[in-house]
Amino acid sequence: MVCDGLQDRLITLTVNGRSMSPLLKYGDRIDIEPTEPEELEPGDIVTLTVAGTFLTHRFRQMTTDPSASCLLQTRGDHQRQDDPPIPCDQLVGRVVRRHRSRLQFNQGIGLRLNRALYRLYKNLYHFEALYKKEPGQLHIPMPVRIAHHIVYYCAACIIGVVSIIALWLQE
Image (tube, rainbow, N blue to C red; front, side):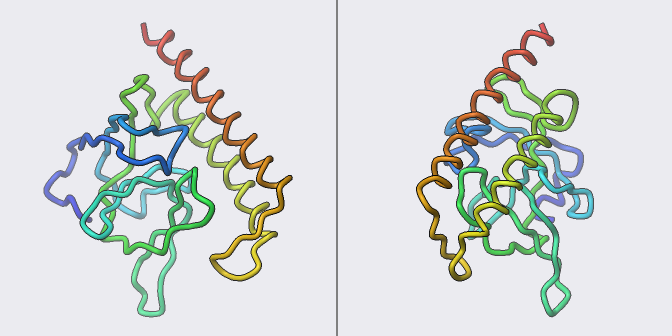
């Protein structure tokens, strides 16, 4: 693991991209809990180091390459294809909290929301895969693109409502 020296310590980072929008927006602060790859579940939001920078995306699955090296498959919620496989030793940890609304992803309503969003995006990924002409290339007809945007904006609305409810319940 990248942060072996940070066992049991939360790491706080600021999001500086839009690949996990609408759940994580540019400028959000997130807490990352050091985690072993074996502890990850599909749908967890993870932070990894890639080319000297941090990457925060949704974990999809763990695989191995021909040399039996552990690899993580991830994808941003706002991305149209999976990231290239990332070695497990690049894992920093799992995102457990977003500071914008005090929504926690590792328990309660935040955990249920995160799992529901993963199921929603997972179904969308399968739907998009039907239109792949060759690996890494998508040809998506307009109705499918519209469906993708509807799912995205519905997810944004749901996240907003759940965040407000979570805030209200914590006060």
